[in-house]
Image (cartoon, rainbow over all chains, first blue to last red; front, side, top):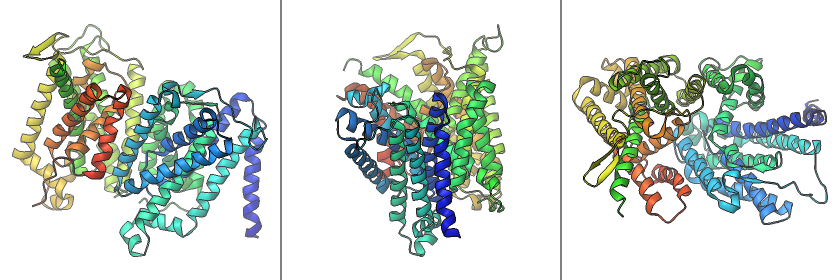
Length: 312
Length: 298
């Protein structure tokens, strides 16, 4: 039974999320697409932070690298889209490795600071990149080219984003449920014990960081064709904080929680902003503090039928 | 090179602000091992509270003298820091939550402070009057705005006081003991809860002072906190997280590297914004103890 059950569930989820794309108007499509990008980012960040225990502030920086790489390579250097796509992914992966190899040696919050510094450097470079990155205004006025003769437009691009989320979720589930995922969790909870059990600490940390960051780059590529505009503020620290909050409120380490937290915090401003005005983020701050204090399991802890583990 | 003396004054003033921010981190980090990013927002809060007390913003026709405004800033920030510790950090420490939990909770506090400032004071920058007017002051070749000299003098005085506090008083010794070994300190009869609360109150006061001192040069604005938080932390990493002198040295090194680099290096001025981050990365990887190492437990 279980053998059939799982693929059916996946297909039903993809079909359901895709069907929504065909029912939405222009504005709602834009909202929905950005939510899908946020979910993809939250899933990989949840793996990095919630499962591998690395507080990395570089997640949006890698999304920026993916987005800028694909646009610069395909538009400014007029490479074929397929080639540009592969090169962009390779660039993200290599840069992630370059950051990960020294950064994952840093303990605890020092990793957060090193990745924060890296992320801020990326923002400075994007702002000062002149014609290459378009400076503060970014790059605009390009469109998704035909890929192998197929032009993807309208709701079909939303379907591509649904598949992007499904792909991210699939990869991360597979990793999580493998030896590698258990090694990551062991490292997070007690690294000396994990090392004693034969987990290669440095390698596990570097791979977790690289995979999650490459997936962030992929989400960035998806984002590049949502508005057909990319600019530095989107990939800044503000959104990084929001992503962190989504994963915390959703429940660290749980993919379903990451999705729930993202949908909740992404849609909340549409309700809150008319009520509270521009300072509505104060509600998010309160929510995060309350979650950490009283519900360390987050939304996932509330949703699951199993009683939450005793707070760590 | 004719503008070098003025550049030195300006770099020293910025460096002193960074040093104060680093000190705010350090006061909290030493006894609790908690990196509190909210200090940047506390600096912004200090600036806004100062503006509210000094200008006819909150209470019409009541423009307080500077000393009173300074006192108000210190009292308000001290209370806020204490309240944050009691409400968010203490419950987490008590139930032995993961080390990262209070740091993340304080990121939530950061957002609460910043957005509250926007809600209360609006999103526009508010000018802040300097205590000695806008006159320029020159000491020999070293010329600058009076406020820059106020910043330098106040910072040096505060650092001397804090240094004396740690070296000469029982309370300072208690702080240091908790920093070296929480458990042993508790066994020696030091009240950990009280030291932690005092650390947060003191950190908030120092951050608030930094914000108040800086505001005449930059205006009070709700986005001023995060850059200060990052620069202050960079200064702390450069100087070393263990010693009060390290915070001062780190702040000055950072500011001089930034401003001399922006002036004399042949690179676009925008790229010099990346300087603190490059320094932060270099120090994290190659000299994580900073320029001045912590005193060992002996």
